[in-house]
View (cartoon, rainbow, N blue to C red):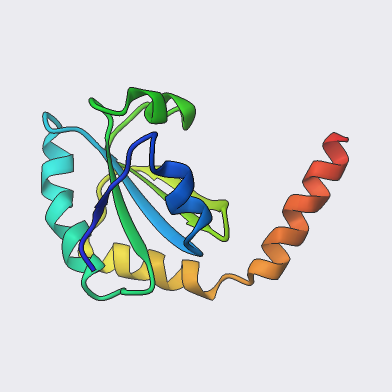
Length: 123
């Protein structure tokens, strides 16, 4: 599956209609982003069950601000509408494969339980 161009207009639809979304926040002028782009694209071909989305932070400053993106590239993973990973820095192909494997193995019932508990505590 090729990557999708994520914008503020399609963000909610993509997150709400897909159980597993990985987002690459990047910019055209960013050298590390340019190096990581092909790694992200190549990995997308191996995971038809995951939506690989790219957010150009120059064009989508509102989305970058919403998620407080301070450094690029930044990867963010949503599973069942919950952010389970968010970290800046380009990854090597093996690191990206490992990250996706760990994200797939997460017990989302437990994650949802923890989120609910945190929300209760905030009251």
